[in-house]
Image (cartoon, rainbow, N blue to C red; front, side, top):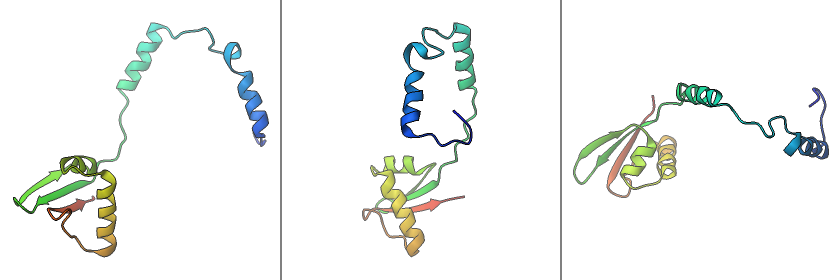
Length: 113
């Protein structure tokens, strides 16, 4: 690829085709066992930089039991709901400033830190 040039889609396709199959630099080669083990170790030791989940506190209005979940995903699974439904509910709570019972049974509080 040439720096500073805009290549047309046709040229990009030709360049791609010219590097396929027998013309590919790794064609017919395999990684050694040592290399595979090295890549495996590197992947296993890689630190995960994911964001922490949003804590969700759900109160069952019938039993008055309060349960705290580590993420919206886990909370949704626990009450047999969808992640999108709870996310939209959080957005609605923020915009309207009102928290109404979910499905007439659960009070949901989202705790973002």
